[in-house]
Length: 306
Image (cartoon, rainbow, N blue to C red; front, top):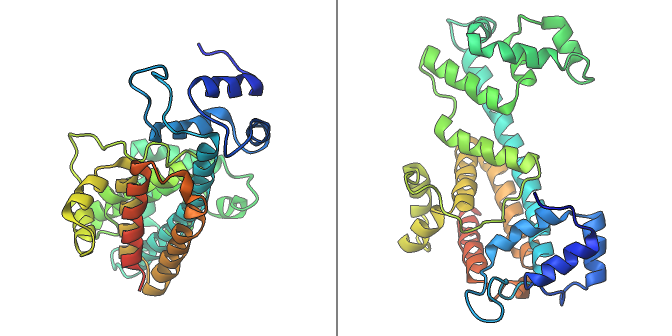
């Protein structure tokens, strides 16, 4: 079991790992760790850097400054906010598509599909989850009025994103109408949850997906249509976990959203990549992994902006 270290001890520990304090002084680093972040989370970004394999500095990180870790954590934070906004857009669009289809389904009254869904033994937990929010300021009136016989237009406002996807899958099995691609949406859900729970997204930028899994053909073809991205770059980058997840999110967004919504969001991403991300680009110029991942994503976004 690792012992709890003080801020001073953490600074000493980082220095023992070869982390320098040139871009950010030790005193400023202490303030940052006390007020803005905590060590475990900040240290996660070390995975983007290599260690010295031999010599006096064996096991220490190569060319890694505290300022680089701080900068990656800030970029990651901004990226999470954008991802959450994109996922909220997607969630709303899914609800609209689902309710519209049910409204136009002559076999549905808006209540029956919910009754069938909840009647499944493993779905009783959903009612329990809804009931647990009966005192919540934003849901209590809806729950009090309809519980437990919800119309779909109320039900979708009370369930989690994951259960919404599960409900869409159930509707597809019942009536043969696909609202969303559930395989791709599972990835979107994972990215959304990671962003919502403030998990690190950029801590292992070049960690590869499980070798037993293949890149989804729709995602690959999405990038294949971008002529300035080589096959080698496409194959290499889509095999990185983070890139694969983020490009899947972009693809789903591209499929579901209106053109105006897409362009507003793509331009926001482009401004982010051309602005805040490269504010301190000199920090990363010697890290070919980080530069390569950045260049790939920049090309993708530039292709999507019209």
